[in-house]
Length: 385
Image (cartoon, rainbow, N blue to C red; front, side):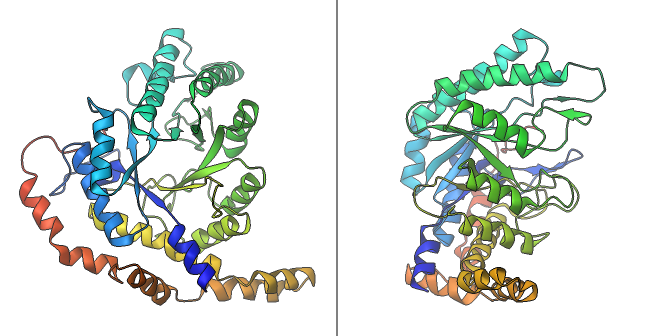
């Protein structure tokens, strides 16, 4: 139990700046009270999540949603709040020029514009001390014959190589994939195999990020996780939940058993070991849950799944597997999943001087009432939709 506690204490779960702003669906973005008006206020809200959970010490930025004049000052502000700047997320999907693609666009001018933005994000990494660049491309085509599928892969590879060469010591990029949307006939990075192939060709500073909402229904995500860990190419996660497609609901909300299965493969593959660099990040921003409590609950959901995964009796499981004991092996697995780990985590928080129930502690803090009263006027932050 001591080892399990030590592992849980060392776990870090990164929250996304955009989750603290107004968000929603393609139909409507609903405004909420107390929403941040700039990246500085986003960091203040993220610091609340870390203050009550103790395991959310970094905040991912999204450019240009989090564009500021002085990124070094923003990083200083984060440190004063007790958090740090995490991954820098690029955005090459919300400009009119990118209707037919960004780095895979038929036009060299548009590709140059998109790649320059990615290089700008590396500059921001330098200024903030971030070690991770996150790349997701909405690029693809909607109709057969619309563009040359192979040529688009060539263009993608060319841009990725230029960005890769710009990375400094201790920096990397994570290539994200998505089955579909907004491209429907052929997405340029539709699956983990495509992302993996590009990353292998580039080298050790290129890794794959798994967004749990970016797969076809029924996809065995834990298999993908196990494979990428085995190959040393799992760079991190964008955690969320899905019922139908890329729903961006709170992680663990739709299928907590799937989250447990994923985290078991992380444990089994050494993904929690120091130095592996697997980043556990949230990427969710839906339209009805309160912002800060939604992030606190999500962090807790990942932590609970991790604790259950750590409780799997791996010796007993291996013995049952070696004997071909199908039901016995499954029982070992299910025993861990059915364990109530909430008392363990409450005890762990108390041992480090935190309230045992982060949700209740935040609700009693008065922080929401404070920001709802103070953040009046100005432009509320959102995801640019």
